[in-house]
Image 1 (cartoon, rainbow, N blue to C red):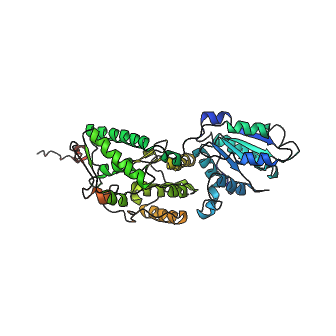
Image 2: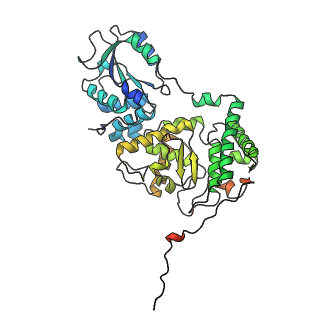
Image 3: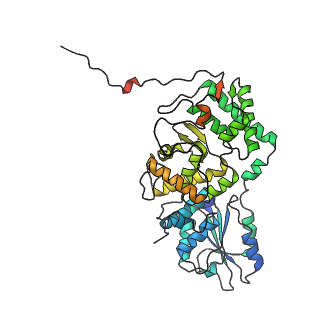
Length: 425
């Protein structure tokens, strides 16, 4: 059936705390009170683990899938635009697990078809989510024996006592300048100690300076505004100076033009509105790492940290800001649900791998649909060794590290060379 998801052997991505209370619960509103509707709608808070869905009256399962994705922050026509109509049910499960939704409130449940109750129970079991079906009718809610029945004031009080909402990206940026500078200096000192004790080795098939470009990316990618970028770069210089190293950077204007805030709030909002995790991750990595399409298509599942905070590519280890880590988590969850091998991460809907040209076409197409500009360094060709992050600065020596021990140079692997056979008469 269109929009259905494959049967799961267990809950995918569900936390033990969420799984313990998962299931269907009925919220009875016999008087169809406007206060009930208003208070339940106000509970919608994805960072806090609560989502409120306004289903279409008399909706079928594919229509309810679009309603659920809309409650998860995706456009209503996202599946049609991205050609993922057959995967709608799976994508709902993926994003509910990635967003860590613990409570899903479905309003006007008395107008839904009875066949959707089984679908809702399967969704709750697969994601470890508690689904609250609101029954705005004087008759008893739902079939007998299916789920608990709550009064709507009790349900509202219980939902308000959910988990503590984490700080949003806007709240993080509004922290005091001293706090941001202190954390950035501490991060730079950790990077400097690692660089001084064990300088990274240049990897094969990479241009010189890739490790320095990855370092600059980790120090600057969290900046969402121009002022925060300047603050973090100043903190990076100070942190390296404390550890006895000198991080040489060009003038501020030239540096800002090439680095800039890679993931400001408008770009993050557009990336999170993409329904297909594979498409969203491809565009995200192109912006955050300056990697070529061939390198993005060759990214492996084990190269991504479980929390989505770091990605290991050939040029080095790259950091992913917290505002977009949910995209990588969604891609990891979908990878497990599809049963893809560990040596691949981003795959086509038919489970085949992307070649370099196909990945370039995907990034271009997704950027056009999401109304996001392509990165300035984006190239369709995939020839030559891998370049570093902001290669215009690293390759010309305008970004360098002074006072560090010389990094190990590439050495031939003698064990892999064919041995000459000794001549015997």
